[in-house]
Amino acid sequence: MRSKGKTLLVLALVVVVGMAFRVSWNALRDVARAIGADATAATLYPFVVDGLMALALVATLVLTDDARQFALKVLGAYTAASLVLNYVHGLVPELHGRTVDWGRLADWDPANWALVLLATSLPVGSIYFGSDLVAKVLHHTPAPIDPLTANAEESTETRVKRSTADLPDSTPAPVAVNLTRLPVPVPVGFLKSALPLKPVPAPAAPVASIAAPLTPRAVAAESTRSRGATGRVPDVARSSRPRRTPEELLAEARDATADWPDAKLTGEGIRRAVHTSPEKARMLRETLRAERAEQAGAVA
Image (cartoon, rainbow, N blue to C red):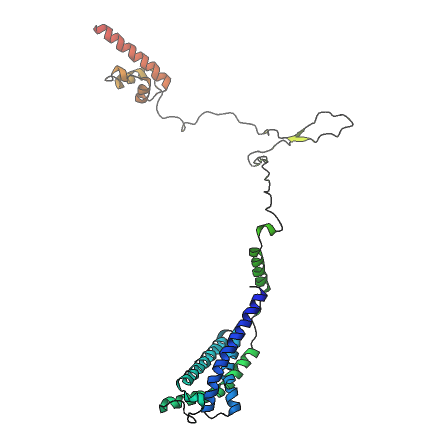
């Protein structure tokens, strides 16, 4: 809200409170006269009650924590007391014309005693509670404001209120990423020695021109370690199965395929049956098919 609007609002509030005080002032003055106050005391009596209410309201705006709760209680108590006295003034018409008996605010004695006690105790309470509230306000030390937090809040509010077009900088351009692939390093642990990189000489250029920079080229590393001759396979690594002759393989194939039909007589089947190489299995297949063909011809 702008400062001009705040000023008008405060002025309107002061006017309303002033008129309300004038209405309450009439009732409290008549009540003060009924309890024995003279003309001057009766005129000042409304300031004692309603004035302390205004003081307590200001104290609630300044104080914090327990002191603020105390100021609220004082404000509530004096508001209720002023309300009761204004209500009594409205119920007793005699108070308006000053025809009521001195010290008589109600017909029922207990109620009258309570009302007189309330009306006479309010000035004493104003002295005590008013002094206490003023002392609390004077000794109140506001909490220190963190400059970082204050600056952050101010910056946030400024950023929210400012439109997008008022921003000083536009959206930054995207940063280009260099995707050049680096050469893969050669592991040193697997090579005993490596030849240094040999730069490739650039072609000859005229004397007047600037020579082009030399571009290094990686050369495959050559190992100086001599490779030993391959020895014989140890006996442990060799197969424990004895080497079979062609006649033995053919005999095993005849026994394994004796009850096989012709369609099942294949090289792969023979290889699995006698556990031999594919080449020997094909030779056994042709031999067995030839034998079966001869037997079939002899029977026919």
